Amino acid sequence: MHFLDQAKIFLKSGPGGPGAVSFRREKYIEYGGPDGGNGGKGGDVIMVAAPGLNTLIDFRYAQHFKAKRGGHGMGRDRYGAGAKDLVIEVPVGTQVLSEDKEEVLFDFTHEGQTELLLEGGLGGRGNAAYKSSTNRAPRQHQPGEPGEEMWVWLRLKLLADVGLVGLPNAGKSTFINAVSNAGAKVGAYAFTTLIPKLGVVRHKGREFVVADIPGLIEGAADGAGIGDRFLGHIERCRVLVHLIDINGDDPVEAMRIVEGELEAYGAALEDKPRLIALNKMDLADAELGEAFAEELIAAGADKVFPVSGATGQGMEALMDAVLGYLPHRTMTEQPSAEIDDDGVIEDDKPWSPI
Image (cartoon, rainbow, N blue to C red; front, side, top):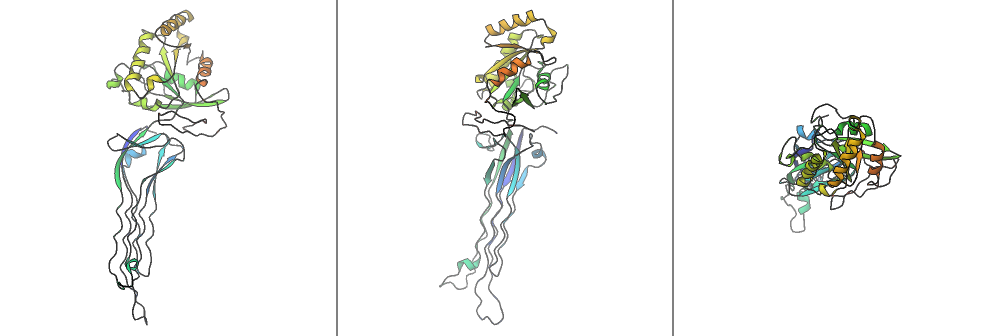
């Protein structure tokens, strides 16, 4: 399945059906009065967060969504049928933005959340509705109200508890494969990860979601490499795990680069708690790891975890530390999530992309 996290679509609700102009015509009835029925209501445009979706790829092939018109009113006081609502399914974590991207109209943070985007037009009145004691044979009617329309942007921000960040080839894909069911692509070259990847981690009877995003390089905020637009997928994470390759030229510089890109991106990513993990310890000795850990702590890291995604070394201690930032919950609890005005997840239950 291809991954797509942004899409622009056109929405239009259904117009109301017109009312009818009709007069009763029956044998032996000398004066037939007006009997034109009202038109039906147009269909609403409704959006719902559906389970099992984790990409907006469907909106690459269909960008226009129009609800049906309400039915026409007819003679014999027959009302037009109301049109069915148009229901659009989106993944959990989708935001609906205005056309200029300046306003977030809706934020779908939990499965089953349903929002009314556009309301269908009301049906027009038929001539029977205009009958009065002074107007016994009205011929006027209403055509029905027009539907509403607008262009919106859909932006997907994956819901995850933990976000992985680091320079390209820091071993993030190997790491997420070691702790979860992600099945990320692994290769001995930079940028093996081109799109965000989610994995569900089960550790000591608890469950949480980890998000792996493409590696950051210096200048990513200005478009270098893959850029920083995928950082939006870790805005809602509770904690970030920063992986640093112990075999790199300068681990302290690697930490500085990534920290600088998080700060340049904004969205309060630089304020999120971070765990520093010296990765690929299976390729280095313990003394080198201790020396680099001291340098990283001197540069501002709170604590450094020596780990190896390939062998599993140090992973349990790191996962224990991650659990300290997550609400206590078991794997048997059902998913739920609510986000406050500051973008902080307030749920006490897990969310799963599967």
